[in-house]
Length: 120
Image (cartoon, rainbow, N blue to C red; front, side, top):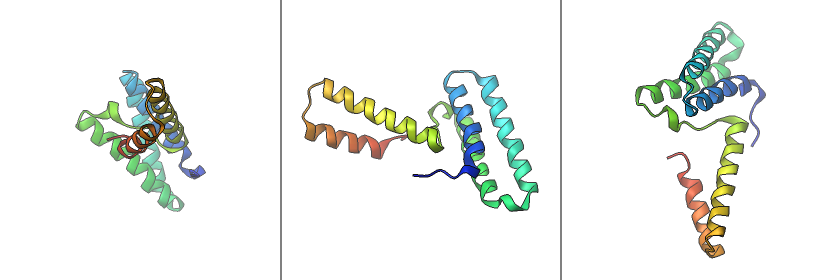
């Protein structure tokens, strides 16, 4: 899964917000949110950035909705970092099931179900 380079800066700002919020570093998280918003305003002025503008707006909307519904601590990373975090979480879950001595068939089914429910 290739993440487009043109989305990397917006993804980076979004991911810094998520990480800072998870660590209860709210002031720094809000700085990253404001920086993402300023980047969105910048992208609106540049005509060639229409798809980037759409992506930035989606990320900013996710943050805004999560803050309003008080679920910002449940936001997931996006882009390459999100894929890495997902793979790490699935590997750790699979390892925990193996440590419990469960059958390979059960582990496989559990991991597939966990992947489907990831982030919900």
